Length: 78
Image: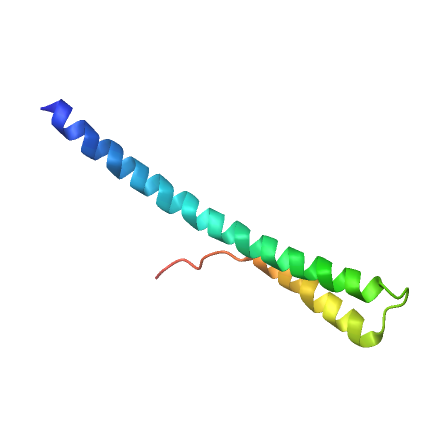
């Protein structure tokens, strides 16, 4: 009997693990995307050796997005 039940238990455990790690991987991708955008914006602004007020605003916005993406947590359901 156990030899028939064990494969179903193993499949259920793998399904739960992949659902959990899949969510974490998706969150990590979002943070990496924001990080790449922030770095690109910063490098472009620094290319001419000076940063204008508009460039500074864009840089701050992009780095704020990185911080928000890395702190973002799923809200608990009520």
